[in-house]
Length: 164
Image (cartoon, rainbow, N blue to C red; front, side, top):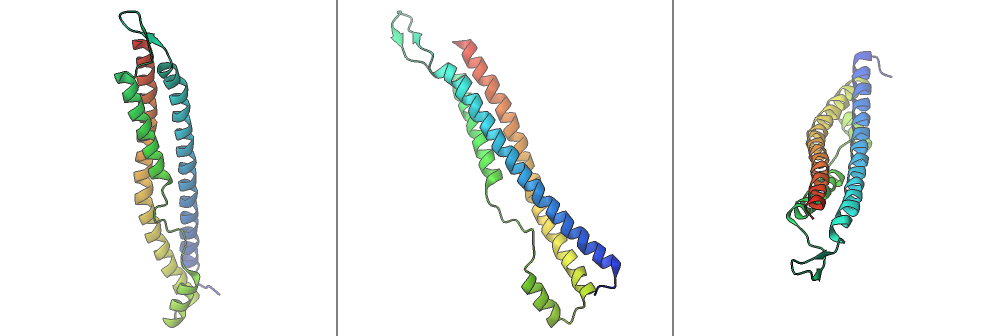
């Protein structure tokens, strides 16, 4: 049994940190999926108004809908939301757990007691947390960019509709 409460507390905290981090990643992925759904809805509704609107030429002849510069800019912004969502949903190399057989085998080979093993595992968990957090911070910036792209896309569609 463990006799060092400080190492046990450190280990428990490291496990809790990794579990919380995994939850944050899943929440971010859910929000990214919602962001892509919102962008698709904006593109469907506002883009539909732009792209299906018939027009006439200067001579009065009927012509199909045109895709103006604002519409192209909106389509590009939608593409950026899609790429950002793909980056967030991509299965990057995340580490939220340790191999229990490996650490028990290594601990026995090194003659570690439970306290020492928990201390080493707390260190491993912390290094995993730091590695994960670097990627997670980057993905949050990607998400912020996706939100911005959605707002810009909406504005571009509205400007395109007004230009017609």
